[in-house]
Length: 552
Image (cartoon, rainbow, N blue to C red):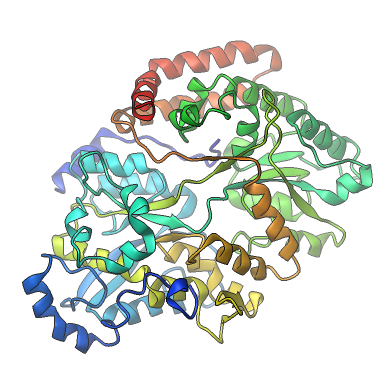
């Protein structure tokens, strides 16, 4: 459930404007370092350029295979307003490093900051005004595909698919991840980032309060309700400002109420759009009833639907939240503010734990929501000329190399990490890294979500060391996030989704709030109205298309 107040209106004027604009020490830890021999110097690259272009593909996009003539590319960069003193999101040690390395092949990189939680509306406005960066980003594949279908973005296949093209990218991302950005005609409308882990979400609770009240970790939605009620109404710290539960995402809660969670095909048909699942999955009615009950009994944050992430994190860090659902490892993640550490600076005895997924109310099984293997998608608007697109793909290819994405994420050996006996980079000084690089690394590294790693085991081993004193929390968080039956997100976009999703999401944004905040006596009628309005917006067309696709 989205609560960021993001408008999802895709104005027709945007489409019209768009149309007019028409690792370790060994290779096993850095499998994508295909350009290492070629990129040692710009001079050696230049010596090979003529032969490459004479016998190879029209566009040379393996980093080091071509030296450009001072081409400037603009690249979107998510801004979380977390730059340390002395730095800005666009002017810092790591943006300088990017340009140092890209200048070796004649490419300059200019970053375009976009507020992280306004990225959709900002992206839509930039595309509509033909001011979108040469590399534009989104997590909503349907928008990227819609722009392509309208003729507003490049088909990247000609820049990627040749045997000599994007060799680092192909080695690091792999064919399956690259193909997520393809349509049925084998056109490549975007480059999708690879996830280091598909772990997605945790349900967190104040363990110290549960211990003081003699409460066990909840295993069902009803038990969760009772635990939160006790922590609010009989608060051990005698606080009268406890807001109960705050929800940044509700993936675990929705899975616990899903009537189709045990049917892999039905899960894929429902997809990851809340509104489509709400219409298709009868169990979602009970999810909204549960949230409505929580809201009306003062156990759910009363302004959850307009809450900014900074406010969300503030409730946790100041000890006002009894429970919350958030991104995996969100309790101790350095990038998200080391919330438990900050809380313990205010309340020394406080503790936060994650719990395994709640048992489904229909079959009693545990289901973990998980990401698909792809993360964000980067695409190139037609406002960029072909040489600029070629340079953009070269930039993404470099990001897939050890000198690129590995360094951006892990830093430099000896300064930021040392290798362990298994060749896995292990953090030297987490506090130093947090201020020096961790605040920007995930957003700068565009071809990997959650880090540059060869395996999930490498990811877990490294990530646990990034929160000194909380290693056990990190391990438990990632284990809990992938407990039970794993239901991965779908990456398929049905043909009618780009055309219909805007109107569908407008209905969703209005009625999700109504369904949760209406008086309990009005819930049945409000939910029935919600489902009716989704039907009027055309959701059944999408479901029919998805059903046909996934039942082939």
